[in-house]
Amino acid sequence: MKQSPCLPASNPESVPRFRGIIREAGRGDISALVAIHRESLGGDFLVRLGPSFLKRVFFPALFDSPRSTLYLAEEDGQPLGLLVGRVGLGGVLGEALRYHPVWFFVTVVGAYIRSPWLLYETVGIVAQLWWRRSQPADDQGDMFLIAVSESARRRGVASSLIRHVMSAFREAGIHSYRILAHAENAGSAATFESVGFRERTLSRFAGRCWRELALDQRFAAGA
Ligand SMILES: CC(C)(COP(=O)(O)OP(=O)(O)OC[C@H]1O[C@@H](n2cnc3c(N)ncnc32)[C@H](O)[C@@H]1OP(=O)(O)O)[C@@H](O)C(=O)NCCC(=O)NCCS
Image (cartoon, rainbow, N blue to C red; front, side, top):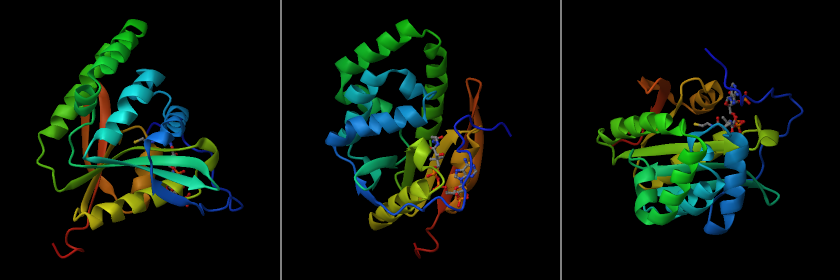
C-alpha cells in the first residue's frame, strides 16, 4: 500500500505519552484549529480552498451546526490535536453554504480562479458526499478531520481524542461510529484500527480511493 506523506517517523520508547486534556473547542480556538489542520493536512481539499475558507466558512459552520462538535487536545495549554464528531453521515459543506453563503461563494470562487484543477476534485468530493448521504444514518456517529501536530505524534493524542468522542457519542445514545479517509492514508487507518475500528468499504470517486472504517458497539450496549 502507498504510504501517506504525513506519516510520523517513529515512536521511540523515550517519547512521553499524552497527559493533557480533551475539551470541546470554541470559536476562540479557530486560529489554533486552522493552524493544526493546515500543518497536518496541507494537501487536503479544504486546506487548498484557502485559509479564509477555513477561518470564515468551514470552522464557523462546524460551530453553527447542531450536528457537529469540535474537540481539541491540549497539553500545558498548548493545542496539539483536533477531531470532529458529527451525528449522521451528511457532509458539513451544505451547512457551510447555508450558514455563510457570501464568504462561501467568495472564498470558493477565489480558490477555483487560483487553482482550476480543484473543480475536478470537487466532483469527487460531491460524489462521495452524495454516496454517504444516501445511507440511512442518524444513529451513526461520524468522525472526521483528525489531525495532530507533527511534533506531538505517536504519543496517543489521536487515540485519546477518538476514545473521548466515542464516549461523548455513547452519552448521546449513539453506539456505532464511522470514519472516511483517503485510502492511501495508512496512518489514519492504523490509528482508528488501534482503537477497534475495522474496514467497512473501499470506494472510488473521480479517481480517488476512499476507505471507510467502522466500529459498532450496539451489541455491547445491549441495544
Ligand atoms: C493520523 C494521526 C492523526 C495519528 O495521530 P497520533 O496522535 O500520532 O496517533 P496515536 O499516537 O494516538 O496512535 C495510536 C496508534 O495508532 C497507530 N498509528 C498511529 N499513527 C500511525 C502511523 N503513521 N503508522 C502506523 N501506525 C500508526 C499506532 O498503532 C499507534 O500506537 P503506537 O504509537 O503505540 O504504536 C496523525 O499522524 C496525523 O495528524 N496525521 C496527519 C493528518 C491525517 O492524515 N489525518 C487523517 C485524516 S482522515
